[in-house]
Length: 137
Image (tube, rainbow, N blue to C red; front, side, top):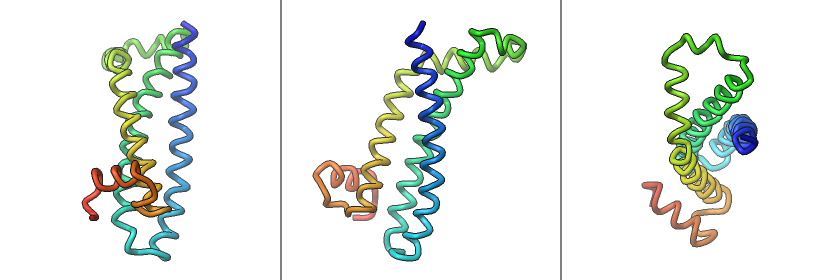
């Protein structure tokens, strides 16, 4: 039971932090657009993967938050909404798969971010990410 609460807390903190990171990314995008407009297609690809990452982890965090609040009897009234409990149960059932998808997405996002800042040849892993997930060769 304690393991569930730890996952819930870390998921909510992680998703919230991702929104903060995205907002700083928006600021950085404006700087890149002025300083290095040729990098904008790469920045847009990075932003797309970042939004996909945020979406996956927000779904997980929302489900964990719902389940946690339901367990402490804060959301018992929402049981009358038939879709929410069913949706949350399915998300919980597939949480490991969603987490793995999120891990891949955050890895790709980080690799693309590194290629923006340091260039696509900074290390073999970043080069692999750049060559695999962009069409900017």
